[in-house]
Image (tube, rainbow, N blue to C red; front, side, top):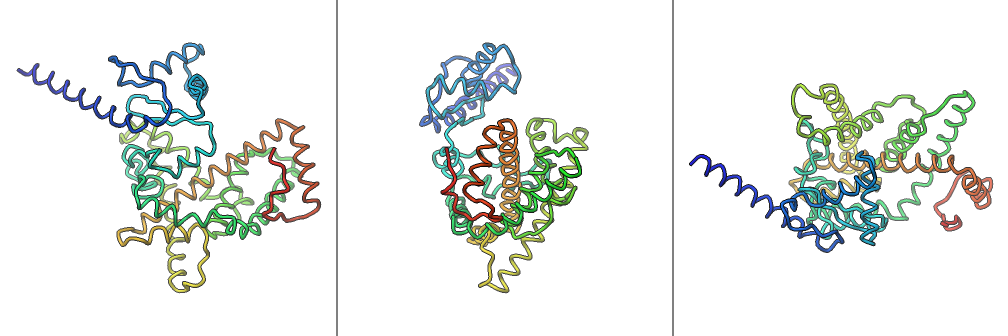
Length: 365
């Protein structure tokens, strides 16, 4: 009897798993994908296909995963595809406009839940919450928040930022010249990280601080710690929560998250009070749009607004730093292209110390 009961439970769990996988995969039938043969391996999705490509490459390192995906995509003759690996769903694309659409169209490209993403809370620490713009599914609440933030990315607003951007650019040039005269070797990613933090804080949140000139910044360190430890918690999600594992990382995570959310909380409280006292003198920056995007409901708490603030601070800093670092690396790697870029900038802008927003005179080819 016991054996029969165990077998029945196992079969029920197996059937439930397959039904769940079928329903979730059916939502993505509008995106090109390799067919998955009906067999006992069906639950694994495209695992067999991925391992087969790895064997053909003669290497099993995870570092080759992007190469494998691109190989599969070319076989499909498409710019975008969906890959199923067990209960995970990955959309892979080389189409940049589509990448932007993935970030805004959650009816076509569905988000996983906050629980599945494992970044709403990490080891009991609230990171990006389960109701913020990052993890809120494609509901009317999400679209309302997104719509409220649109003005912060329009040309009219960006033109107003050129003064701050010019000032930060000049400061960066002065810093690089100073280090060059001192004969010091620079970690370009670290420099661009500090520059990106100053750009995001100044232009997005009107938080003026001298991050570039500071050798060490607590806020910069906190953001870097979060970005390095959160992936560790995701890779080891089955063991990271155990009390005896990753103790140093957990302490750094707690300290960094406490500093980040504490700093953000102070800025947010000051801005809400300022907007309340002087409703006609709002800054109209990203922070103001985050506040307005969350004020449509009495159920939204300060912590919910903090989630969106933290997302823009962390994501804006990291993406900007990586983009600028890659640009510098590519220009150094290709000096002929670098000389052409310098010549064109000099031809267009001459001796102007400050740039305007009109980039139409710069070649895009």
